[in-house]
Image 1 (cartoon, one colour):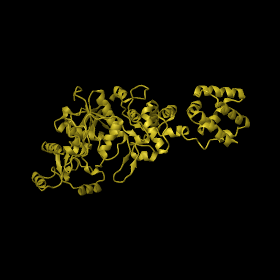
Image 2: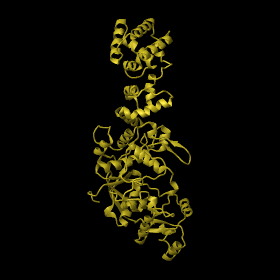
Image 3: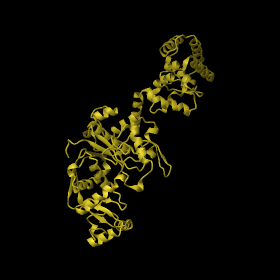
Image 4: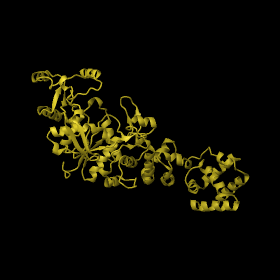
Amino acid sequence: MSSQREVRVRFAPSPTGGLHLGGVRTALFNYLFAKQHGGDFILRVEDTDQTRFVPGAEEYINDCLDWCGILPDESPSKPAAFGPYRQSERKASYRRFAEELIESGYAYYAFDTAEELEEQRKVHPNFRYSHENRLNLRNSLSFNTEQTNSLLAAGTPHTIRIKIPTEQTVYFEDMIRGAVTFDTNLIDDKVLLKADGMPTYHLAVVVDDKAMEISHVFRGEEWLPSAPVHILLWEYLGWKEQMPNWAHLPLILKPDGKGKLSKRDGDRLGFPVYAMNWTDPKTGDLTKGFRETGFLPEAFVNMLATLGWNDGTEKELFTMAELIAAFSVERISKAGAKYDFEKAKWYNHEWMKATPNAELLPQVEAIFKQHELELPSQPYLNDILSLVKERMTFVEDFWQQASFFFVQPEELDLNAIKGKWNADKTAFFEELTAEFESLSQWNAEDLGAFFKEKVASSGMKIGELMMPFRIMLVGGKFGPDVFKIAELLGKKGVIDRVAYALGLLQ
């Protein structure tokens, strides 16, 4: 395994449903490593399990990666010299290697039916097909050559299983975990080729990684128990010198740290775990995604990168280019990373502030269509977005933060001021609006100075009058600088709203 070899990594999802954020993080870490080393990032679709294939899932995976900016150099839709990039289209190659393993004594035919294996499980609750029982089961190790050939000639359905050796230790060096060892006595004889002629993950991943010259494999920690089977296959097929470097990524954990984060956790706790909306074609059930929840792709990617990795500094906000420059396998944690949705929202809030208005305006404009309101001029909308953007976590928060600019609030939080309201305050606001009429300059700075002068001459405290003024304009105790609000509402808008509020306070 020369460190000088060209870097080629792959993300190899199965098209069986929505793309979990853990899967996107695996793709991201592969991508960052490849780009940092001037290598290639490959998307390979592992569709060998036809019983779990879901129509539309491959397109969905492509759309998710595209939204995140994790763009493959090679894929089914961008083929190159190492194709095909769907395992179902590589079917012919797998049997050849499975048969080669049988000829060299590293695998065998197994003729046990699904029903027979189920009976074994009933009798032996912890049943596993292994060195302990393989000679008592229906396979080419327990049958003689004549029996085996007869069954094969008759077209008897069968699988091909790896013959795991006994009393051996499988060792490899993981880029994240260091030395990892396995006792072969504890490993079962995994199926390599199914009865339908399709390979299992174990055979296909090794054959395809070799064929595609994959140099490094980043995959989830849940695949660690499969690693010894794969390492043995690399050795048995005579490819050990070309075997990739391995890195098993830490799990993304539930918010309480107890177990792997699942879609059910998201449903239960009210946050997405899929990158984008996924509708199950069989049931019609919709699972909401980060994109449709209102996450910016930059924020989603930034958040994912810091789940189990940091650059060793206090820095938390990274562009994709900065992630590529800073990424290092040495800084990936061995321990699982707790998922924190509040932190995820913080990332989106920070990226919302950093994103140019021009990129957000199309989504803001869509809000007006939802509310069936005429779209304001773009310069006006841009000014308001600039004013409230720092208060937004999601684009849809724009309406909560800024609707009062476009629709005069009918209900005002007058309970907050009624208790201390008096005739002097009514007179103050009546005089204020009368003098507003004659102001030649209408901007936040001049309005603020004018208001403070009026308060000083009234003998009242500014705190007694600022809050009522805000509530008159926006309906409640919220919003940005009140004089910037007044500037954007315009002279008539401010005068009308104060008059409306005074009418309610009589």
